[in-house]
Image (cartoon, rainbow, N blue to C red; front, side, top):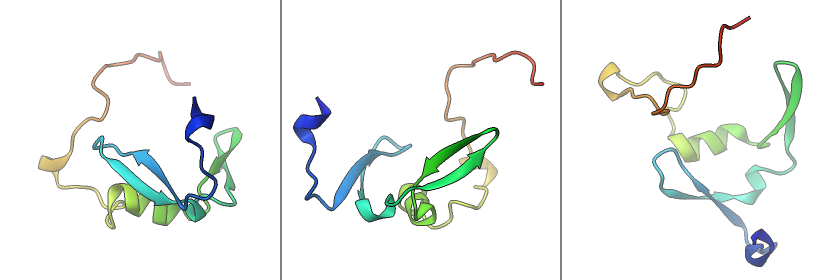
Length: 84
């Protein structure tokens, strides 16, 4: 399915943002990926992660929004048990 829509000549990729809007992101933001440690594993993140986050969340993505603008992104409660 994905192969049908792959286009290596395309300069952008699309992402479904947290607001469920399609966002166009330049491919060069992702390459080469950076490896960062997350807990006890290494994961790949976009090379220019700051630019990626600004495209998705806006220039002030590092600021805590005013209390009236905060909301839970997860609508179902998941109980993972006690944290150790």
